[in-house]
Amino acid sequence: MDDIVSPLDDRYKTEMNAIFGERAKLERWMDVEIALAKAHAKLGNIPKAAVSQIEAAKGKVKLDRVKEIEAEIHHDLMAMVRAMSEQAGDAGAYVHLGSTSYDIEDTATALIFRDAIAQIEKRLIEMRKVLKELAQKHKKTVCIGRTHGQHAVPTTYGMKFAIYYQEAGRNLQRLQEAKKRILVGKMSGAVGTMATFKGQGSQIEKMVMDELGLAPAPVATQVVQRDRHAEIMQILALTAAGAEKISKEVRNLQRTEIGEVAEPFASKQVGSSTMPHKRNPHKSERVSSLARLVRANVQTALENIALEHERDLTNSANERFVFSESFIVLDYMLKEMTFILKGLEFFPKNIEKGLELTNGLIMAERLMIEITEKGLMGRQEAHEFVRELSQKAFRENKHLKELFAGSAHGKKFTKKEIDALFDYSTYIGEAEKVVERALKD
Image (cartoon, rainbow, N blue to C red; front, side, top):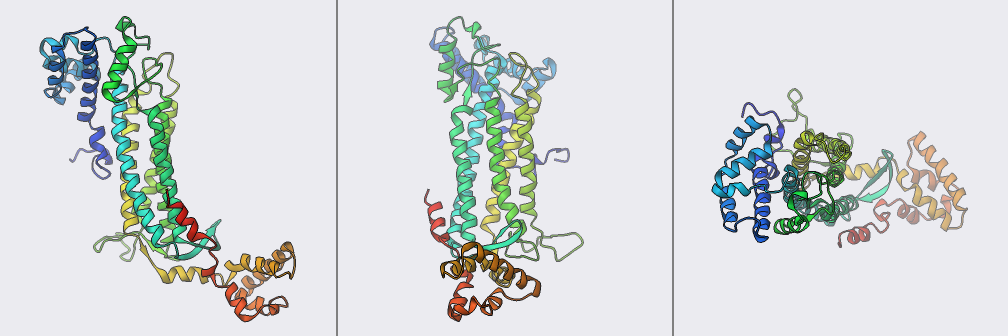
């Protein structure tokens, strides 16, 4: 363990690691080889008995042996072919028949993506469940809404969580909709012409993909085109940005001067090595940090689209990093974000304090509307009147209600009416209905 380089192998390790592990990749490669052998056998190109031998070989191939061969020949896929052939007896002669490396590798990548996407979907569903519960629970929890970092008008915490719930749902939909373009394989040879299959190429390709539960690429070069891979990387980045959006709000609302919510903090947890009092939102900060990594990998995936001619190898090395890295990191992010949301602490007194902080200025909009509807002046005049009154309240550190009540226009309202105007709990519009609507899908 002391020679681990990547934090993906320990600190940020999740169930996703097993999907992208070396053994898992080797098995997916061999699954494609087996599917190819089955297609050949059905068409009479190889003995039917060879299929069972090749299938049995899969369980006998050792990763160490594949690595040993690779060290000698410097070709990882061909190392698998030789190792599998060694274990298949006479049937080893039929392993990899007619295919090229990326017939196997790209098709296997689609199989890995299928499992990885399913894992992300699972995480999103879990996180949405928690968000839905929070939105329901806090649909009447009134808080201050902020725009441009300034206090705006009242909203509810239910609205915040409903926003996140819906966005996570859209990312889930994006994953589901993209599968028809992402879960695609090929069995079409060195430049996509299927020449090695002597007229049976389309049939073999369809048989292989049917066996594996994938769709065949309608046309390919030596590789499946990388716009497909870039698309899934972009969806992962969108999903990561959605998680970061939540984490950033938690971080900001946990600021000492706001203190409305806080991520969970264990009884023995340490916030700082020198400041014993610190309760840093480090989990949320971690989510924000990792989102940058997932976004950065999109650039690499986009650059991989423009390979030269029928393909070059400039995509290969970086894909060994970016696919596994983005999926594992996002899986960790969603797991961490769900944990944060489940343990999120609320501080009602600070929420109320935030609503009172501006001495009633957050009700200026409502005051403007009511003055207009009472027929005292037009909307534009009312806006200017309340604007000037608000500036005075700010400069003199007085409550807007007090200044309005003492104005000529304010005297045309009863005390009860003015008190009602400045009751922020009744100025959330249809927030409750909006939340209910958002949670119905």
